Amino acid sequence: MSALAGAPTLARLALRRDRVRLPVWIGSIVALVVVTAATIRGLYPTPAALAAAAVVVENNPTALVMNGPAQGLRTLGGRVAFEVGAFGGVVVALMNIFLVGRHTRAEEESGRTELVRAAITGRHAPLAAALGVAAATDVLLAAVIAGGLVALGLPVVGALTLGAGIGSVGLVFAAVTALTAQVTEHTRGAYGLAITVLGAAFVLRAAGDVGDGTLSWFSPIGWAQAAQPFAGERTWPLLLALGAVASLGAGAVVLGGRRDVGAGLVRPRPGPGFASAGLLRPLGLAVRLQRGSLAAWSAAVFLVGVAYGSIAPDIGELVAGSDDMAQFFGSAGAGLTDAFLGTALLILALIGSGYAVQAALRPWIEEAAGRAEPLLATALSRSRWAGAHVTVALLGSAVVLAAGGLGTGLGYAAVGGGTGQVLRLLGAALVHAPAVWVLVGAIVTLIGVAPRAAAAGWALLGGCFVVAILGPLLGLPGWVSGVSPFQHVPQLPAAELTAVPLVTLAAVACVLLATGLAGLRRRDIG
Image 1 (cartoon, one colour):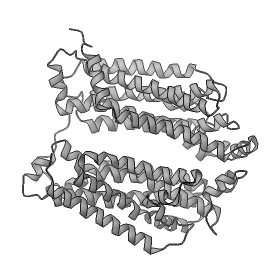
Image 2 (tube, one colour; image 1 turned 90 degrees about the horizontal axis):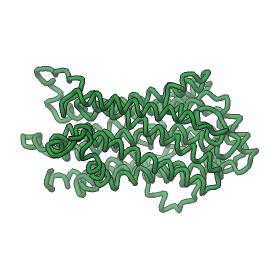
Image 3 (spheres, helix red, strand yellow; image 1 turned 90 degrees about the vertical axis):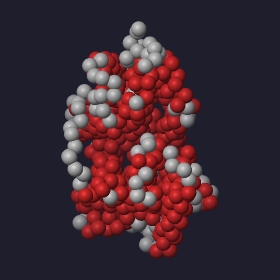
């Protein structure tokens, strides 16, 4: 029997299972690129405006670290590639990591791969199917991104190069995940290793872009940007990505042939003979399960906050020549720097809400995986079990917000803002906590009342992003913007602190949490 027997059937099954997930990923990423391109055209309508904005970022190390090399910034296409290239590559890489991990290591961990292998299925068929689906998704994504940019009037060759570059990053990390799935027995471990590689790739690219460019050649994101979309395109750097995919894929096949189904190359170390006292309590177990993601989210938001704080003094030059951008950051009676910091803290709160959504969904994930039922078969009540995870989500989200405010304050202080800005911006970041808690409450309500729709919590966060980032530019009606709880939070330090909206949001969060926990007590588990 061929080692790839049954791969086409497994690929069709994967597409069937992800018939909603993949269109959402593709649609969101394409919307990110296309909407960004349209927004940049509105913000910088003339070559003079593009040139003025280019002068600000060309020699700004923070901008280069966050976005990539300064190439083609005096053209609309070059500015689009600069704004979406690195971030788009990271998002596409995450899509591929979760896609390949879901259909390889997660299937083995659940025991389904062993059942599939009992039929006429080759040893490497699940891996080949996962990589095939990932490759097809990346090619389609690259084509749709290019088509959307061409529809906006951007040059065809540059659009194709940008789309191919973003897709190539996804392909590389699909292969990276295929390799990490062979190393560890657990899905979280495979994801963690792959995301660590992604973080290293971003750091190498950033260090290369602020240096002489050498380190960027060790990063798949750097290869995509070296293709120079809209800046004298060259496609040969993308061949490095194809070579890496072939090498990593071959390595995954070799390693997969040297281990048992369900096992990893690295055997997990034995745990302690006795559980700590904290793990005997629901809250201690919830903290143990979520401490890794809390640390990762806090570190990421902190670093983004440092970047925002360090460019705050240059915001006046950045918006020069762009009335729309000045209006976007403007606030009644507030200085432009404070208005920018208020917007930056809002964006950090939205990013940090990703942790809140992930943590709030943990009871649903534990239930779906069958791990909640054995716990609830003991004297542990549903309210205590779910309440522990909700408590971690509420307090953890405040920690993530504090990390963002602390990073912004330290970044601003480092460039001359003064040490007093640290506590000021830390407090301004924590003001967004009630809005995040409303989001947590909405997800808990879904888990308790309509568990099949619980994953829609990510869509709720996406809607808040759209309202916050694009609402002022798209001129959304007030009632539409008002749906987002973040729109009711005073954007300190530009605005004055008022307690009424914060108390109201906290009360709404309490009602939603109570509704969700009450629903969970009444419905069936599993």
